[in-house]
Length: 111
Length: 113
Image 1 (cartoon, helix red, strand yellow):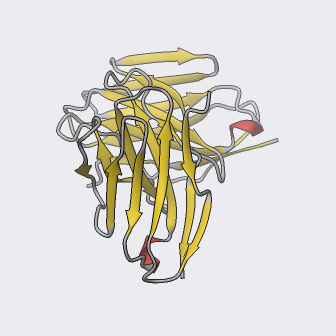
Image 2 (cartoon, chains in turn purple, blue):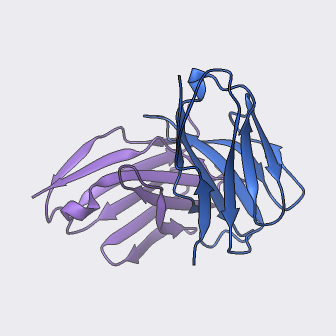
């Protein structure tokens, strides 16, 4: 089992819809969770981080964490074509101490 | 505010050649990292430096060496390049407290022929 696994995608949603990106992790002791957005040919940029169970909202983005289920998700409301990118989930397992990344999910928002 | 600066941006090497990828950060971060990114495989950690003077292997260290020259600079060296090292390389830095995750450089696209 991969340490961090994301839904395989690619995910295609119409403009204005909610995009849901999912991530599971294997190390139950992981403490911090990050979502990065990466445009084609660019470097990853941090868009959300979450430490506690529940929801964390920032504008159109909501990160959700369920440590019991070892699951973290990112919801993008009112999706825009400019949201089209690869989204990377990253986890900080305490046994390793460095961020471990999932393989990424490609999101396409079509007009 | 430059953040994390990587050089070069593109490089083509022949099999067996050597090269050094340079990385410098101006955010006074303690920790620095080198990742490689291959299609469908996400980012994989090659080496990291938790603080000046220390370096440790990551998930895929074979064929690479690193030097933490000072607090600002962390270089990655390929001693004898192989086609399997064709990839996009990212340098990143972070503070120990993890409030903001990593800051990434713009990447180096390396092709080994």
